[in-house]
Image 1 (spheres, rainbow, N blue to C red):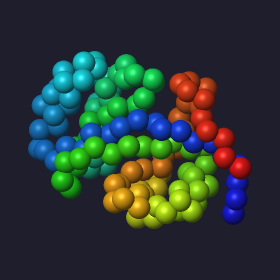
Image 2: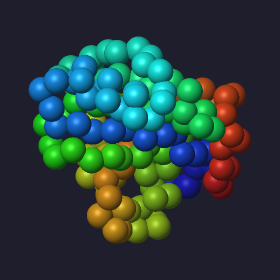
Image 3: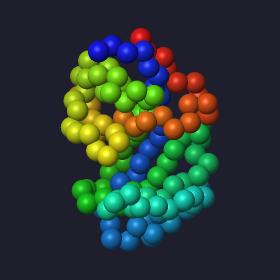
Length: 129
């Protein structure tokens, strides 16, 4: 299926393999000079938002079980259409997690395709036909 949709870089998630999420969130807040926002849990996952990133990007510190890394999120108003578009570029779907696609770039990086939360804010999304 080829559906017109929109997408853009949403931001970065700092994945931290740690038992002390609070200390990790505090470090990244201070290191990046971004104030702490909401802290929340989604199942086993712990998140802390960092506010005021350049360009309206969404930055979060996430507690994870896998090795520490940074991953980016691409947000789309149709996550399936965006995953299809990225597959045509050479990415592969790793799996559907909760509400988003976990993808792998041809170069091996993992990233997520997430639902666009605030299309009216930030930079204008790319329009794809």
